[in-house]
Length: 420
Image (cartoon, rainbow, N blue to C red; front, side, top):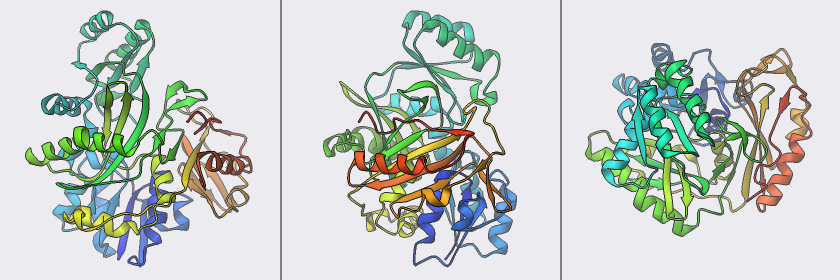
């Protein structure tokens, strides 16, 4: 098979790495890829938003299957366009991707189906949003309705902070069209966990559990990011908790989407808050998480390609997945200034030494090659991922690798997996 992976982040590096290991695969391409992905695939300079160029490339290069990594092209209808041209693709249609593309759509579905989630209201008028916040009090959550690269959520500890978030979205237009409508939600107290399932429109196959760290700073301080680290499995997601998530949250969602004529195919990623009243849905993503995908791919024992094909073909009930028992932990190294204004263009040294341990893999995200040098070219730049006998061992191995990387212009959290 000839497979194209669409995307350029650490998630896509992990997917390309896993796909390239499949005996079913003859050739892997990536569009546009990065310096790390180039070790697993042939990178082609096509933007993820250039649907026409992607289709043309697939036709000219006889691509058998396309795996779409990021959310933006999924929400934008890339899978629809590929399938219309007879090119098989993994990922949801634009209609199904609305579960991530519009938080209001997702919350309305939850309300209709009785899926446990935070109480909410939708607003386009800043004065009305602020009046509701005044009645609700703090802490409170303010979210941009659309895609905002992981930065559209404010967990406000004061009413004033919440008002400022409303002004940023509705007044200053910080998130553009994605913030033309906002949601104000009650704050849910508890521990966060990530639950992933691959879906074929009607069946779902649970993946291993994971736990992400969203805030930029140690101790969960600072602004939200796309994710500063993750580990798998998540001890809090016991078999009993997983069964409840499937029965009360993910299962009813998949059934509702199928009933509404927009069956969901692809990865459904549920951000869950484990509250005193049981699991509640925070949000849905319609693709693998980043950096959770890096930890999941390190633990995956099965060939991923037959599972992705079965999801696209609607026969997911005929396949299974096996996992390594060890824990995987990923530490994200980001460029100084992230998440607001990351510094680009600095050289990263020591990657070979850091990956000399066979149980360590460095997944690259915002990188590019400049001759023989690896240069930073984004916010989140590296995902230093390690396997260990348990969480403590995986954490120790990952940070030993981090300390071998010579990159003064980068930083990471030092507490990934440290409190669990």
